[in-house]
Length: 258
Length: 239
Image: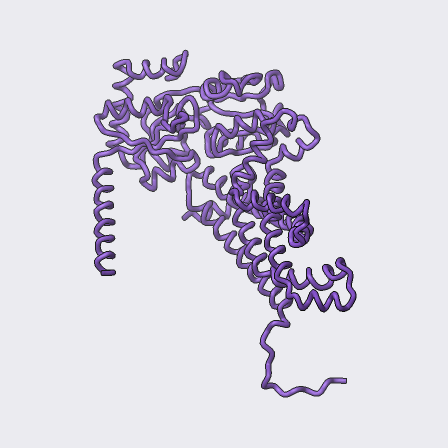
């Protein structure tokens, strides 16, 4: 009796494992973040929306594969890709030399500069000297984190798991300034109620050494076929107007960059 | 595993150890100080304070520490009047918010541990103290509390270890504690194991130290409970 039960359990387990393997073979699993408006965020009903999500779906449609979106916290994104939790990252990930040591990237699918935000009129300049001794908030493991850690050594860098937490602590008055992608902050913070009274200051930051050439789709090293099919799909949706349609849904300006 | 990442970034881990140890030890100190009077009042079934203390321990033991930390850190920071109050310099800092939440949390658990130990005082000890003519205060100080602390020690050592493990919550509100340091290393080099393994090893080492320390303490305090040797002949007293 006992053995019979155990045996059927093992069988059921093996069956489930088999199902999982079968599903994986025909599916492409895409890692997305879900806390980076307007590129990816979650609606009240838990549905993922945003520019990254729409682009990922358009690319999958173009590549004629069925895709599953897998949500993943930002700071575990690359490790999760390598652990095969998913096969590609479509999460506004900038193509940087440091990241290219561990993953491969498709060509960029958009490129926007980084900028500082603070209370309106609080700062006029964003040089390391102007921000010395100030508390600057940033999302952990981002190009902005890298840039601040290297260049703003006299400021206190406060690191957060998500960009949403950075906004929360800026409005709570715990941070003097924050650095992130200008477009993400414009759409995700400054143009919303929470961002009233806050504004950009300083210059556009796009030093390729830190900020790379734009956001690309990351795949595991050596998966050249997948990378190539993403490149082709990006070119295709750029050519047939799908890209522009998605872009206009979220932004008033051209974010693809020169 | 790339061990050079860990050795090159030992300064983050050191900062993490300092932050974790200071948070946990201060929380245990404040929590302990708060819990003793609460436990006495609670064990006495004080008419006014009894239900209030019961409510306090019920809420803090009944909700996750993570929520308590979030409510103090993000919740209080949302109110303008708190941002303008004199308490803001303290509530502005993530470290202080964590300390406040940890202290209140461990005080609730410790109150219940001490209350149970006080209520379990053998009646004979109380009667003997009364027979000696001790006042209520003297009896509490010289008989009930010392015996209750001895009984509470094993349960309290668990609470200390739970507090150490629970303190990882601080890393979610931007404090660089031991786990936070591991996450900074992970984030910097796009790895996962290096930071988490080094954090786990440090926590493990701390738990070993704490359990060893409590073992020694228990041996010292519970020496009178050890079985006595009966077969050894009595030695003549030395002069």
